[in-house]
Length: 466
Image 1 (cartoon, rainbow, N blue to C red):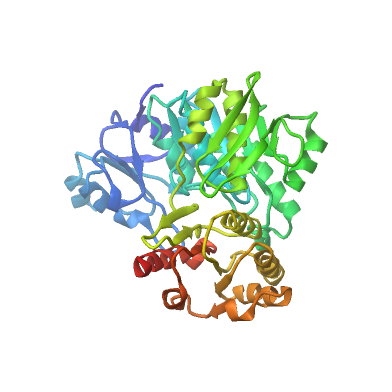
Image 2: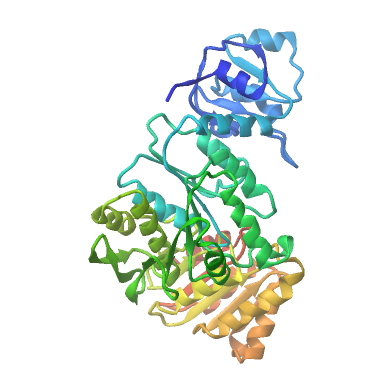
C-alpha cells in the first residue's frame, strides 16, 4: 500500500492548501487536541455543542503536523507562525473525513468484517477480532467508536501492515449504517440480532431490521453471518437464503454453526462443536449464553477465513471484553459487582439476569435504570423488564430513572416481594442503600443505558464496599 500524502488528500477532498508542503506523508489522524501525537493530521469536527475547528492552532502547538478545517479565516501572522506546518481548508470537514476514509479503505485488499445488531455488537467484535488476529494483523474498532466519526477515523489510522479489519457499526436512524457500509466496503457482514434498541426512533422492530440491513449497501457479494435464533433474522434468512451467501449460527434453531452439550458456568461456558471434520470442545472465558452465541459467530468468521481449529479455539479462549461490558469485580468479602451498564434493552437485561442467576451467591441484587430512546414504547418495554426480573431469581430490585418506575410496578404485579424493592429518583442514593443492605457474597448487577451513567455508580459502590 502506498503512503498517503497531503497532495493525495487535497485531490481526494477538493481542499485548499493554505500553507505547507503537499509532499508530507500522512500516517495518523486525530480529532482531539488533548490526545494529539506528534505528526498527527488534525481534523476539526463541528458538532452540536462543540466546534473542533476553533482549536486548530492548539492542535499544531501540541504537535500536529497538519490541520484540516472549515470556517476559519487565517491571519497573516498565523500563516507566518505555522509556515512549517500544513493547513488545509475545506467547506465541510465531515464530508472530507468520509472521503478520506473511503479513499484509504480502497487501498487495502483485505477481509473487512462489519458487525451490527441491536445488542452484542461490541462483545461480538471483541471475540471475532481475537479469532481473526490468530492469523492476520487486525485493525478493530476501539471502544464504541462505531458511528459516522469513529469508524472513518478507525480506517484512517490503519497502518500499512494491516491484513484484516473488524469494524463495529452503530446507528439510531435510517441511513447511518448505509454511510458506514459505503465507506468500509465490507466483505463479511454480521448481524447479531434485532431487538428493541432505538425502537422509539425507528418505530418498529421491522424498521430496525431494515436499518441494520443497510450494512449490505456498500458490500459487493459479501458473506452474511446472522444469529439464526433471532426471530426476525431467522425469517429474513428463510426468505433470502437463495439470494445471498448466508451463514447461520444458533443454539435453538438448526444452523450452520451450532453448539452442543452447553454447560453454563459461573464465569465461563463450555460446549462441543463439530469443526473441521471433528468434534471440538470450546471454552468461553465469560459467562452467559449470549457469549456462547458470540463465540459461534466468531467460529463462522474463522471458517470463512480458513483459520484452523486450534487457532479459532485459542482466539475464543483468550479474548477480553471492552470495558463496562460484563465487567466483573470481586471484593474481599466475596461480593461480586457486575458492571454491565454501558447499554441496555429488554433483550440485554434478560441476558444479564440469566447470567447472574448462574452465579453462586448469598443474594442476587439487580440495579436497573432507564432504557433510553424507547419513545412511545417506554412504558411497555420497561414493564417487560419487570416481568423478566421476576422470572430470573432476583432477590432485591433497586431502580432509578424516569421510566424505571414501570419496572418496579410490573415486578410488584408479578408478585415480587415489595419489601425487597427500592426506587430512587436520585440515582446517587443507590450507593447509600447498597452500603446499608449489602452482605458478604452478594452479587450486584448494574444495568442501564449509557446516558444513565450507572457505570459510575457501580464504581462508587465498589469503592464503598471494598
